[in-house]
Image (cartoon, rainbow, N blue to C red; front, side, top):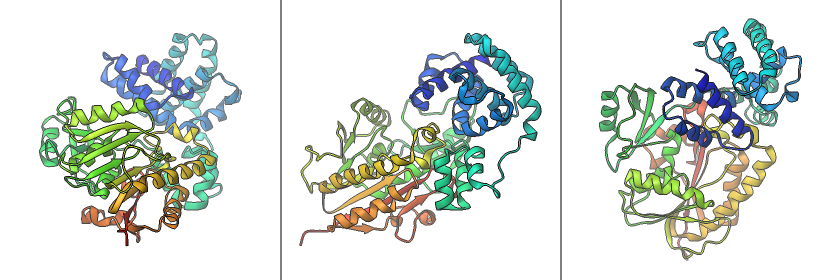
Length: 449
């Protein structure tokens, strides 16, 4: 499966140079249309697995390499990670094959001069990996979080301080592959009907525990998912499927999704309103609007208009107090979705959190101006930091006396009550609920007196 490894190396190199893993991998797979499905699966696992477990791999490699890893050229280090991931994480690939294929790839990409080093380190890892002395979580929990669960050191320290023993559970959950979930497009079918189609096509799926429209794909069959071209489903995490419900969109309403791309929540708002709401979908980057437009067209969503706009600035496209509902799914640190966006853990710095919280306040302030008296405002982020969650809410309410917090638990089925805190704010965690880490809070603008 050298093609899979070569593709993974190419994508990992692009990610190291600033590209996003999902887009780079999707583009690479599209160019390799004839790639065997097993190779596609291996390439995908290598890319996401190596990014999720980078520190863990580097810890093992550093114990066996006489050359410090930071002194290796990037492509050599990536090849070592590709080999190490197969040895440490993929039992189905025998050690001799993992080593041989990685060395062969080094020759293929004109790194023959490094094959001796790569061969020696990987062979030694294959022999000695059971004897590696990993950090003890009881003796040095920060080191364990850093190297064994593959967190950047600043995040390991932060979570150990703020979450205590729960930090290990969260970090372990984020080290695993994310579940594959689908939101059934209720504009075109029902969850039960689409589940029957999946089963008939040879896929093993089940209804999600919390999201009313969700399906968990436990094991894919040999055939493609039915109804892709017809827009019967949208790939979306279960926690993300809950957010549109919290705004409770209704027919005839004027709604705004302030940070909409790629559009999963926007199209869900349209479906919940039975295509009878008017929805303005914004994104800062004009080149991302096509994701919303293409998704809406595929799913058959009506009433959605897209616009490029920086919501830290006063909007000129809607009058103050003119909208029934506004969703602020704000840009955030994304610490609740690290298993889906694993490269983020190596790019994010702790100082970024304060900057993001400031931006979130600015967006909320501009969005609040547009909400009519009696209208609703929902704030959501896919992270778990206090600065971006409860602190943002506290500061917003201090500055906007015309808004009152509103509990959100009644917007979802009774089975979802455990997802809400005592204030009625949504808090989902991967290790507790099996879905991404989200926070959401609701507000109502008080009528003028």
